Length: 405
Ligand code: PLP
Image 1 (cartoon, helix red, strand yellow):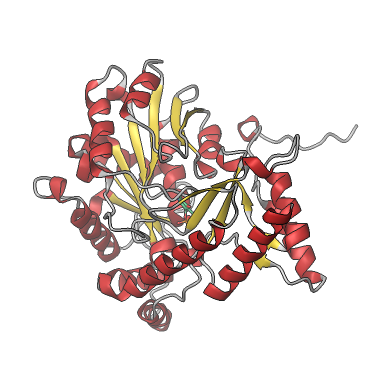
Image 2 (cartoon, rainbow, N blue to C red; image 1 turned 90 degrees about the horizontal axis):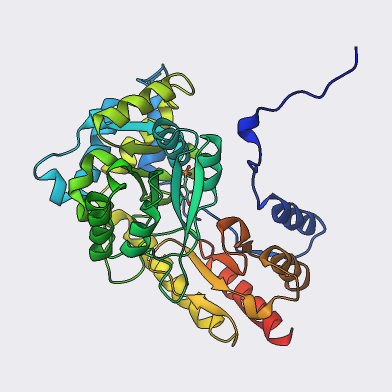
């Protein structure tokens, strides 16, 4: 009998693991050789988990709070999440507030998004993804058998999709879901309330809009850098309550990336489907992390303001240094902790942002993330979730390199 290679399921055709793995391997190899690399790739806050959350986890372990939890999560945690969401959506919560039963706690925002798409998208359905996008959206869409349809935005127009563009995309009659991500990874763009309301109006009034579920990824809600406040999508479009899945979590807001706590808030029909899916896959998530999240969510908003101030300062430092590179097209972010820059003017013939980042790493010892897997082949993402000294040194090296190349 001949030995056959193991079959890999068709649903994983074309699904990539992590497009940035190659670059990370190169960073690690350089570091192993003792090279002083400034790493500006972090997708997570560099701050420590709040002490109250750590203590709550220790207490939970000591109290043996380590049995299975309900699939959707501990009731007090879900209630705190409902309260937080209601506070961000007063236009809706004054009449139809969310309650604990509308919440499913998952293994990070990523699983919450996976659950939402797998629960609502059938093979062949179109999923609208404004580009540049968080690189996981198309991959999850592909796993669900959906067809990713990209809505191209540009730096000149603030990396935001317009109501008119959305109306046009709905004409296919096959759109089932729309991703929104404000503030955005990778661009740092943030929609205004009026823009979100217009998008909501299109979904309420245009043919095809009535079939669409919105996945509103609000994971960077606390990382807002300018004067404009964060706006939750349902605050601007409360009429869509039954068709929006609001995604959030502890990763970026409480620096708890490794604890894997995210959630979805949605109407009973969607929440029921998400619970069923999660119940047959991962079940309820780690009980200790849930108790830690309860403590973190009980902290007053003001206890996180020091982080926001630091992000704002680092943003200013980054923009100031990068302004010295004449041909770099930098987008000043309004939220999240990234600066997205178009490096088109510096690309060599045939080179895309992957090649560019490899070159900058090898020759200037600065690690950046290429925009290609985010749907922006001539841009790069720089993270300022790192110390100010590292940031200054990395930005300066990069600018020096660009100016002499
Ligand atoms: N959404 C966006 C836009 C992100 O950038 C991330 C993480 O990088 C996530 C969701 C998922 O975060 P987590 O699974 O850590 O909660």
